[in-house]
Image (cartoon, rainbow over all chains, first blue to last red):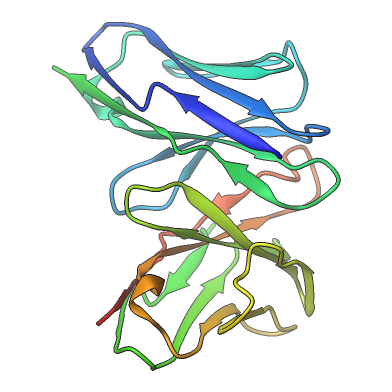
Length: 110
Length: 116
């Protein structure tokens, strides 16, 4: 069965303390891995799409990487405004269903 | 460039009533997804539609739930005879299905349904 597992469930960082969020997946024929940010009471905000192992994408303090079994979201020198839930999702190969992980709740303290 | 729009943002219904949730995709997008998010849980896929066509409804409950995306107008998620367990946030997303990020989904703000 296709699955997406994110870890840790929650992460507390001090401002400026870099870290990484993990997304491991099992899916037959990956057609895309997506990272989103979700603030309380709002819809997910698109961050990155990755299609193949070895691919990397960056945006401000965020960098997403992809291997054959997992993806990492690296946060460099985070700020309090980076506090949010970060969601990982994969597109099921051969179909149209998108499977989301449960998310990692990030708290950045000033 | 307006994003994905959903209305209403909040909807309160009594058990047994009908709920209608609307979604207008981003300009130029002709594909729509619906998701449900229960409190403290992840997003669960419900249905994927393009104009006048349901492509994948494998995540839809077998009864009481239906979705449509007519040629004109917004996509609608309809829940008949609501029960308390239907209380959740319902999100709509649209994708361009062409270009560089053709499978990337852009989400609306959601409709929060509360069933009393």
